[in-house]
Length: 475
Ligand code: SAH
Ligand code: SF4
Ligand code: F3S
Image 1 (cartoon, rainbow, N blue to C red):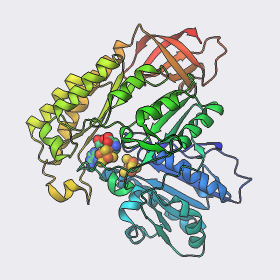
Image 2 (image 1 turned 30 degrees about the horizontal axis):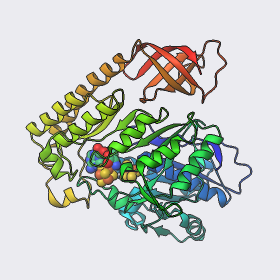
Image 3 (image 1 turned 120 degrees about the horizontal axis):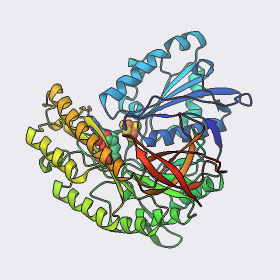
Image 4 (image 1 turned 90 degrees about the horizontal axis):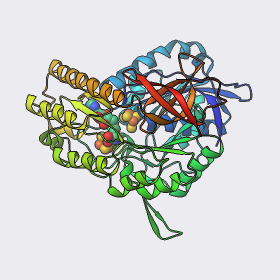
């Protein structure tokens, strides 16, 4: 696996993240240059690393400056309308450079899959439209596009996992990396476009996952996040050993690479997370004590319309089980406000569920109807926008209280922190995270530490999003 010092921050529409930021790389050794921006979830970010690898093998080097690129790629997200509007706006910004240099423009990812050839009609500057399972066809399509022929490949696959492609690490801090363990989603939550843009669920060969994580560890990485839309339904049969590999077994295999390798995962589905997974987390100190368990709504009635296949009571029982087996685990969630037919009473159910769970972290959105989804076909998007926004604001305000309480609970405690790099604000301070996923900033003092090292930090105070501490002991 190649690791380049290239930046490609996720413009995380799904997680309310920041705008992209492109590359830093000597590209003189390459015959052509590409520029890539990623929007959406971590899966897209991870896919951009596959794309970078495919292009790299074709003699393309990355550039941080789209004005000097031969090929501009934009890896897109369709999860909410706003995500698509942001991308459309960004495309218009490439218009003048296309006119000036004839740069090829390619749209990848979920919006490419959703709109298919229609995107070529709607966005005249686009030359290539390539869906998430079709990245291997990029070189051929680029070649055709260079002769002036626009290209589309949005075929979804039942078995493509890109297992044999070694990702080129983009925007790497050299410490943390994403590893895709599966693709697609079979869940059909009624609000969600992902099953249509990412296709059927399939799990990647466990050997290739463990090999990738081992390779990352050998290169100095100290944290891997195993990625899938629904990691708990990971399922792969090891024919050599005639053994079924569940997500719990996979977690264990990755954890066994080294006690120095932290293992995270995202996302868990409340209906699928098993005791076996919880006990595996409890057994291995290096599997992070942190679970992202999207609830979406606290009302059983709305959950049923959302096709989430669990009730409020089921969800609460899962949270209780997590707290029983993993008493110190961090818990985060996703919530949608104002789904079709949501009443004030349903909204209050979400509110009281939040009061029960007291999430450490929550990503909250108002419902955005997506064309083609089950909800768009079956239900009317009948909650007025101002009501959606008011309800969203109420849950955001409540979550703020919970997250501050969660930060305050960690003051006067000591945590094992993995150093990820310098603090953004000062080179005199380290930036790292605890196992339960909280950011910690602390002075370097005179210790001879490096990023990738572990250190025990005593937390003295906190802000809304950061723990501030001092080094207590080294490892
Ligand atoms: N696979 C993950 C989430 C994928 S999308 C899961 O099952 O939880 C990330 C989040 O975006 C979802 O959890 C949901 O809260 C939100 N989301 C998805 N579709 C949406 C829509 N149409 N409107 C608003 N938010 C949506
Ligand atoms: Fe979408 Fe539901 Fe699949 Fe998550 S589990 S990607 S919300 S359909
Ligand atoms: Fe967006 Fe596709 Fe991810 S719709 S959230 S980029 S799977």
